Amino acid sequence: MPSTAPLPPSFPRPPKSSPFRTSGRSPHGGRSPLIRLRHTVYRLIASGTRSKLGHLIDFFLVGLIVANVVAVILESVEDISLVHGVIFRGFDDISVAIFLVEYLARVWVSVDLPDARFRHPLWGRLHWMATPMAVIDLIAVLPFFMGIVLGIDLRDLRVLRVVRIFKLSRYSLALTVIADVARQEIRTLGAMIVVLLVIVVMSGSLVYLAEHTAQPHVFKDIPTTMWWAVVTLTTLGYGDMVPITTMGRVLGSVTAIFGIGMIALPSGVLASGFSEQLRLRREEYRNMVDEVLDEQLGQIPRSERRVLDDARRQLDLTEDEAIQILENEVKGVRVCPHCGLPHTSHHRDTDED
Image (cartoon, rainbow, N blue to C red; front, side, top):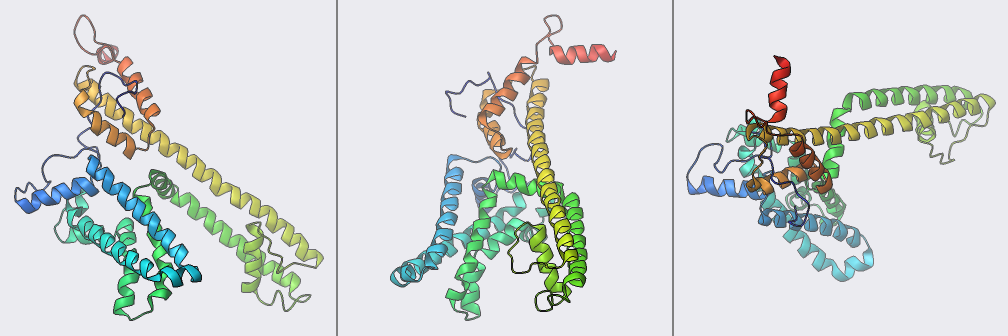
């Protein structure tokens, strides 16, 4: 946090189980130069706490990803591609080299991640390589090597390079929250998708029965009519397939009404899940403060300023939210003048007695 912000007198240390806490030693206890180098690289690119150099690396990679997406878009314009094709190809070669080094570095340091699944030198790394973000990192460089190994014209694969935009999800906290919400509500969203598929099949089948005789070339089979059902449910209404019979129009009206509800339901679920995720993140931050306050009689050391600020960023909290939580928690603890214990803890024990 900036030094000019109205901060509480001190800051909390994350609990030992917190994913934001990193030790100064490798989890494997190694002391060799290679192990120390690996742990240094881990703190720069994979740790929850980052130095200034780590943040600069993040900004550089984000800028490179955005520049790659812009380059793919511009390269699709024939006039620009003909004039600056050499520049685009050179930029892509440099980008692939950087992304490949980043990917290999993340594979190398994955054994230092807090998750015990990745601790094994071989199987842990293979396990990490199967995670969604690792797969995205690999896909970001695959088109280049596919063109070389398979002898495919790179121009045919240039559009695939746009998938590099998904690498931003590692650096965008908003996308991370959305992904967490999707995982949290996966069962509810899955149930809605099943209901949507049932409606599509039923609407397509009924409208096929109502319209096939009147428009055999338009509603020629159920799969084709299911396209009409999808378009109607999503309220797009392209107009390429329009019922003309009375029964067909009734079914079309009912399908459109169902579509309004089916579009609104997932939006409500995601909005509710998003709010819940934010609440959980604030609660986790508050618990970090509570633990340190309980341990140190209401005193939170200033030496943990950077750790707390990194944790705030990881939890996607604004500075105002963090300051408010800190002020509330610090004001909520008063040392008892008689026993020297925190007032809240002292009276909690008294009430239990």
